Structure formats: C-alpha cells, structure tokens
Image (cartoon, rainbow, N blue to C red):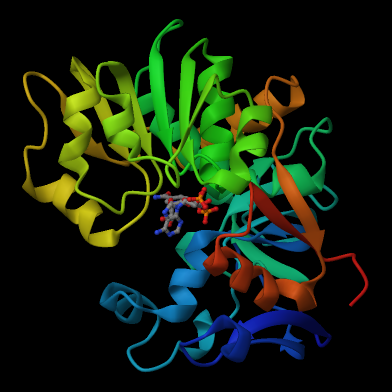
Length: 336
Ligand SMILES: NC(=O)c1ccc[n+]([C@@H]2O[C@H](COP(=O)([O-])OP(=O)(O)OC[C@H]3O[C@@H](n4cnc5c(N)ncnc54)[C@H](OP(=O)(O)O)[C@@H]3O)[C@@H](O)[C@H]2O)c1
C-alpha cells in the first residue's frame, strides 16, 4: 500500500541542546508498514526521560545505537511510546484490524512516536481498553511498564514497606500508585516543590531530599524494597535502610550506576538483593496489566499537561530543568 502524503513529525538531525536541535517538520514521508506491521495514526505520545538522553547523546552507547556523529536518517523521529488507531495492516497481520485502538512501546524501532503516523510490528501492539483514554494510555508503555516491572522485581506483599526514589517523575508516579494498589506502605523521596503532588498519588510519607539527607533521615527504618528511578549516588548506601532480605531495584538514573549494579558490585549485606531493571515479564504483558489497572480505576496516570507537537522541544527542556511532575503527553490532534 502506498502513501504519497506527508506528515508532521518531531525530528533531530544533530545531538545537543533539545531547544536547538529538536525541530517540528511538516514534510516527513508517512511510513509504509511491512507485512508484519500496522500503520498507526498516532493520537497521543508521551514524553520520556529517554528522549532527552538520546538527544543529548551524553552516553557513548546512545551514539553506538543512533549514529556516531549524528542520528542516522532512519532514527531521527523522536517519541518512544504511542497510543493510536490502526489505519492499515500488512498482509500477514492477524488479530488486529483497521480501526483498532492500540498502544505500543516503539523503542525497538528507535522511536517514531512524535509523528502523525508510525509503523509498528504486531508483536509490540496491545489493544487499548475503552475505559483508558488515548492520553492516559500513551503514558503506559515506557513509564507505567517500567514501574510495573520494577515493582514485580520488588516482590511486594500487602503491608510491605517500599521506598520510592525519584518519586515525582513519570516512573515514580506510577511506582507509588502500583505499590499502594498492592497494599504497600510507601515512603517517597522527592524535591520540595513536588511534595504535594507526590502525596496526592498516595505516598504515606514524604522525604524531602532538599531539606535533609534522605538516607540518613531514614536510618532506623527498615524497608522491604527500594525502588530507585533516580540513582545518582552510591547505591550501596541503601543497604543501611533495607531489611536483611530486602530488595533494591534500580530503574533509572546514572547509566554507570546501572552497569555497576548489573555487572559489578555486591552492594548488599546478608541476603539483600541489588538488581537493575530486567525484563523478566514481557513488555506487552506489563502494558496490559497497567492498562487494566487504569481501566479498573485502581491507578490514574498523573498528567501534568497535554501539549501539541510543536511544544516537544519545550517539554524536553522542562524535563532537563526538572520542573515536570508526573507525565507530559503530546496530543497529535491539538492545534499546531
Ligand atoms: N529501563 C526502562 O525500561 C526505563 C523506563 C523508563 C524510565 N527509565 C529511566 O528511569 C529514570 C526515571 O525516568 P522518568 O521518566 O521517571 O524521569 P523523570 O520524569 O525525569 O523523573 C525523574 C525524577 O528523578 C528526580 N531526580 C533526582 N535527581 C535527579 C537528577 N540528578 N536528574 C534528574 N532527575 C532527578 C526528579 O525529581 P525531583 O525534582 O523531585 O528530584 C525527577 O522528577 C530515567 O533515568 C529513565 O531513563 C528506564
């Protein structure tokens, strides 16, 4: 099937400051799905920390994946998760049809979500429940999914005490709500301006790291699990506030901390377990679970604002400035 029409998209042709290198263009070719793919009309996409890391390319691994000196031509459209409607299907596609409302993590195809259309292999597609809006659903594939995977690794039981670090961010906002839905007591670390929002997501206790050293302040309390989305200090510090058989799960933060936890150190004492996020459960399974929780009103994505495509560079700047609370959503139907 041929598409001669062009579409709007957010692209980056160079690495650097998002406000300078991330641009809205109106002449991108609409992609053509292969036989195992569908063409999705993107209704909404969500803004993720990954977008800003990719644009800055501060970590060499990003250049290895996206292009050494500048992003390769086929990896220039940003946006890693989408919710939309199927427009056409490839000849081998089964189980999905034109008109289906779907959700997808499109990291494996190096993005493409900040565009009017995206092609997605059916193995990454999940049907959107009617009860979840497109704006809510697009926040799930990366942030909601990572939070669900992390909380599964934390193996929470009702009554457990969980500490969430980076609690005010996209993943933290889901992490708190998922842990609460599983019956945990949640302590949350965040900066002063975000205390109220984090409380509103259900946190039982707020530790404001701007006012005190959060780990020092928690000594004497023993947590069953630490869920860390902002690992910017030595992870081993958490052993002091974990139970003897407690679990520390690193979801995000400094890339080198992630490598250290994954491959190097024994950070814990006794039978404490320090883990970096690993995909023990299929991404699509976790996405379905989180979408069901939204549909059942057990959790509610926290959307700080809904923006149009042209405002993506601004949104990436806000993420870098750490003024975002929860998630920012891009609605492709909003006026440009
Ligand atoms: N592996 C995966 O599948 C996966 C999926 C999603 C995200 N992640 C990773 O998880 C991390 C969090 O993602 P997110 O979407 O929640 O990001 P986010 O929305 O930017 O939130 C991160 C939060 O961490 C806090 N923070 C503390 N120190 C920080 C620092 N030095 N720099 C930036 N933030 C800091 C900030 O809150 P305060 O202002 O309150 O400190 C911020 O709200 C990122 O590293 C991301 O790459 C991994």
